[in-house]
Length: 110
Image 1 (cartoon, rainbow, N blue to C red):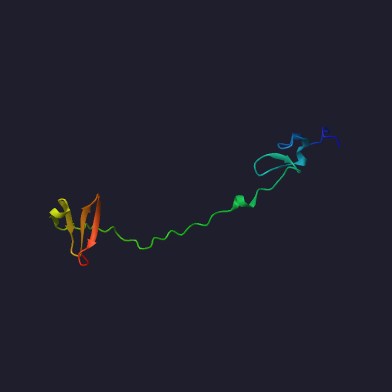
Image 2: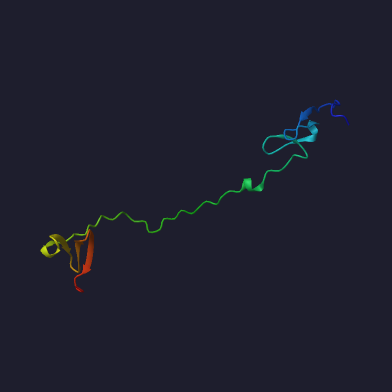
């Protein structure tokens, strides 16, 4: 059958993929809107229809923000044996500046 033959209610079209001339009745519209022949027609992939499940957004241990708690440095003691460097003393440990770094020690073990 010639493709240029006149058929009432049918007309010539070009396949958007392969470029062949066909009658409109021999083509199909694909999911992406292209008018294609049967050889170039493909269904839309099922993964295009997958929807993610909504996540449950639970907030555990929700409570108001607590006020800031600052630790008091305690009294500062000056010791001449350590080149006049300050020693910060708390109840159970002390801190001193020695050789360019802070050193902490336990008062009970010293």
